[in-house]
Figure (tube, protein in one colour):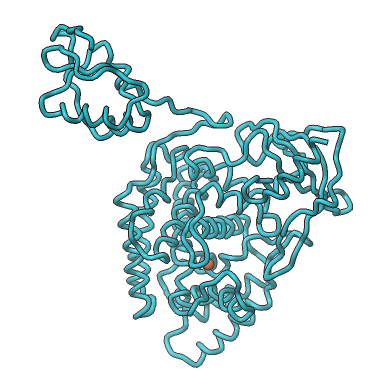
Amino acid sequence: MSTEKVSKDDLQRFDFTQEIIDSFHENKSIPVDFYNKDGQILIHKRLDAKPEDFTKLLKFEFQGVFFKKSDMDKLYAVEKVPTHVNGKAVSFTNILDEEKTKAQARLAEDLLLDLKKTSFSNNHVRSVQKSMDSMLNDFTGSDEYENGLINILDVLSGAGVSKQSELMTKRTVVAMGLKIRSKKALSKMDEKKEKKEHLNLMTASYLADVGYTKINVASSIDLTPAEYEIIKTHPIISYLMVANSSEMDYEVKKLILHHHRPHRGGGINNNFPADKFLVEKLTGFKNKYLNESDKEVAIRDIDKQIHEIMNHSFTSNTEDDIAYLSLASEYASLTSDQSWRNAMDSKTALKIILNNSFFSYSDKNIRDLFDYVGLSLTNNKSVINPGDLVITASWDSEKKIHFEICLIKDIDRFQTRPLLERVGSIAPMILKENKFIIKDFDMNTFKLDRRRATYNLMNSVDPRRVIYLIDPELNPKLHEGILKKLAG
Ligand SMILES: [Fe+2]
């Protein structure tokens, strides 16, 4: 045992904060020597501290524990956090305030309970608008709102609210993040117009699924055609609940009505449902309303919506908003517990969205999700990394689609625009269930590419688009199969 004694003047009293004790536990170390007030050693520093060492340290708390002033840095050494990921500036500041966000989720719960009993009133519109306004102000009021963490999963994990209000809150926050980050206001005028657009998108995200309060939803993954028909109808039901409100913006109603129709692609790259179903349903409801009193607002709105659908006259802004709402919905659903599976972590959810994106989202939509909010949803850990294998799709001049297997060589700022090395090609197995999906890739069609050409997707004229991450956990068979082929 050491008999070393330190002069009282060189000592400073140690403050037992939970944070610092936690960091000792986490690092399994006692980073400095600790002394009593007379400068006699109590506990030596240990880099492989055992639980009993911490117990011993805590025992001395009441009589006072001291450390050498010169050890200050070692004791309060802040863990170095990266300032950049993939060359992109990041911040570890949590943007969302825990208490405020929980309060929002509870408001959502109250609204849903209310809507089970009554219909949607102008009072509801006003209270939702107020709540969206404060959510937006809180978000943009944070110093780090452009790069900070969108800590919504952490905040809601212990909120103890119902699943539907958890989904509403998550969806609204993620859609808000997408909208804010992918837009930059150019002038004060733009700012005002954009704030209105942000609020419209948020209100629509919030209310998109209120239709479920009026219908019975199946809770299994294998939906019968009849059950799928009900699910397919829910945006219309949600829309009809708000259509007659004179205080709700036409744009909000439109976004709710179309919230699962994100991408009108060309040809095969398309899961966009036919307009016919929607127009027929809307016309049916309109005819019903013509025989009812006090439905003038809804009737006028339905007419306007039908007119726009028939003329395909959506602006690119509206199309982006619908995609953000749809992406935020998928993310919220994947990261929440469902009766048929547990909640997924954020990274896995993003991988699944990417791997199912080919028929449903534009290149830009996926880029906005990954490259503007992606890192903020995954504690600044990149989902796509150098060394990963991905599959890209590109169209040639004859509209033929090529699927290529590429190795990620480097990423400069944008995860979906990496530097690639082509290692082979492969054909997808496309299935049409309720929607078109890529079920898997067919190893029998694999062709090795010995030329190993490189492509930089940062170069905007390159037609390739990353559509699939060959993930060892999500698709171990494909991952292993391809590694074997590449090994020769
Ligand atoms: Fe929905």
